[in-house]
Length: 132
Image (tube, rainbow, N blue to C red; front, side, top):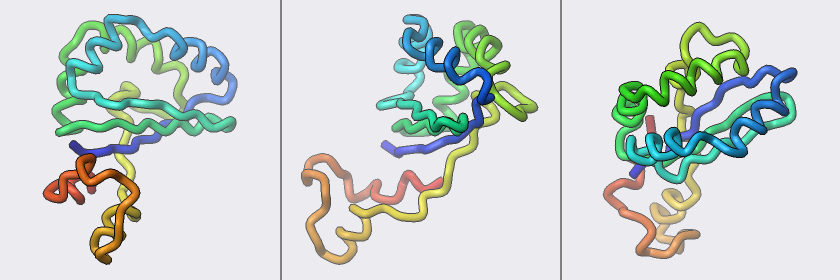
């Protein structure tokens, strides 16, 4: 399972409504995200509109494609598009993963030190699988 971090820019004049929309996402959308492999998905919003999404998935491209095949996603993306600044495509197609440049646990493990997570929480074969 890989952790992926994405960013988008919410228009500052739409922040409050964006928060409201995400306080009660449609149940059908929630199920679609889960079923498409969007695990432990969270969104974080800075006061200037920077939106940071964090999710865990086996394959981001497959998770995005699975959502793209659902009717609920098409409806959600159409409703969300006006909230974002400077997009030339749907929000779920415009997001780009950030490059991982530091992983505390990976570096601790490489140095032979105890990590911050319990040993059963990590699979050493996937230590760097989240680099995209």
